[in-house]
Image 1 (tube, helix red, strand yellow):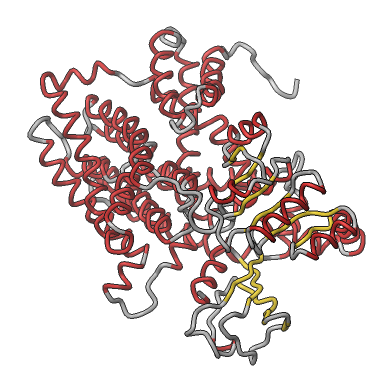
Image 2 (cartoon, rainbow, N blue to C red):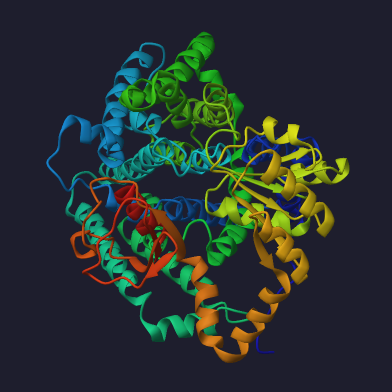
Amino acid sequence: MLLNISFNFDYFPLLVVAAIAWGTPLLLSVLKLTKIPSVIIEIILGYFIGKYVLDSIDHESFRILEFFALTGFIFLMFLGGLEIDVDQIMASFPRKKLTYARFLKNPLLVGIVYFLMSVVLAFLGSLLLSNLISIPNLWYFSLIMVTTSVGIVLPVLKDNGEIKNRYGQMIVVAAAVADIFSIILFTFTALIIKKGIQTELLYIFCLFIIFIVFYLLGKKLKNVRFFKKQAFKLSHASAQIRIRGTILLIMLFVVLAQFIGDEAVILGSFLIGLVLSTMLHHERSVMLLKLDGMGYGFFIPIFFIMVGVEFDPSALMEFDQSLAGFFALLLIVLFAVKFIPAVLWRKLFGVKKAMAGGFLMSSRLSLIIAASAIGLELGVITPGINASFVIMAIISCFISPILFNWMSPVNLLENEKTIIVGGSSTAVLLARRLAMHGKKSIIIENNSARAKEISGNGLECMEGDGCDAAIYNKLNMNAMDFVVVITGSADKNIEICKLLRNDLLHDNIISQSHKSDIELNLKNIGVKTIDVTGVVATTIENLILRPTTYHALIESFENFSVEEVLITNKAVDGMQLKEIPFHKDAILMMVKRGNSFFIPNDEIYVHTGDILHVFGTDTALQNTREKMR
């Protein structure tokens, strides 16, 4: 035999854990409790199966579960790093003379000051708590309290449509800074506690040097034609070269971190996530979906279930009569540590928005659990404190989003949005793709069952008839909103478009046509039309005549996109293109002025009202929008 495989391993414990991992999100969906993070239920169910189902399993099977749990934790830290937009943080470095006004508008500087304030408040809170219980190491205890959870912050901001605006970016960068600095301080602190101040600490700086080398190398290699060709050629079917390469890099950084010390594994897995985040478009990467599938589909649920399995509530008995007072004070301090520094956002966003941001930053999950477990192993955290932090993690990641939504409720009807009339599969796909760009959309569907189905899939849908003018008033339709009419019936499309154009005097209307007479009818009333037959024919033509160019443009959706940017900034009016410092990852394709188009060159003057057609990364497009608006 080429391979000696033993089938004596007991798969029952893994079956139980896999069943919980599969059943938890399904249960929450059926009970319509999708706002509750599934990890909370996984931890709770993990406790019960650990007590009543897995209490008698053999040591070897339990060790395998612990290995999978550790792998899940490594994946969690890696995906945490992957969620952070390094380019956005780099773009926040101040490049002009710093003033108080510029400081308040700079997400990175505000995030750093926010973190430092949190550290000071956490240490003061630790001193206060030490009057109730014995805390072996105040500094380490304080570091645990300054953690936050990017994994909770990002989805809540996306759901609220705040992820792309300045408010959302302030919170995201502050959460990212908290994660990065917390992990760095944890690593140094844990190694000093374990080994003292020795030359081995310098190895951590070597890890950072390797991180910088990989960061710079990755930025170069991702644009090399040979590597792009090979990555595309081997990214499908059985090869999956990108996923294999990602696993290789994770293992490389984890092994290097283990060489420094087990406590550095958090830092190693987090750093490689940061490296890869510079190579992927966070919103649209197919590879990111695959990595999420591996992590959140298998390994990460095992980590949280095992947290519940190993949770020991009897450890809380060490507090005796002080338990209730300690719990109450610890919860207050955990929120105060994040809530008070949010005063930095008050001047920009107002008191209510600032308070909401502080509540959201108070959510803690994976890092607080991991840091507490490491502290328990090092002897600087008692079993009772460790159990308390697990409970606090559950409470905070449940309460924080609720408080944020209460203070800063979602208002889909404000600002720009796209109204899609008709709940077809095309409409659903369009809504999902717009969401990838951070654009708000709402579907109007007159079939009750279909409307409920669309809403159940996480999309905004209003039941109603697109021929009823009142529904557009309910949606607070404004002149900037696009209305896409795709009901599936050509006659109904024309009827709705006439209502929008003639009765409601709306301009931004898009519909589809299959015949020339329908297209002419729609164009006569000022509706932009999509010739479905022509689109299909053009696509096939491109695949035959220019397949390489077509594939390159389609595949670039992962990293690049095209956007029309209207110039409204009077400071740019009358400037030549060569005088405007465009982002290095932005390419100006065309300039539209009125009904005329110009191929751009350095000598062209631009004016307010001109529309720039820009091709580039999300960061580059954001930079261009800020300069032109």
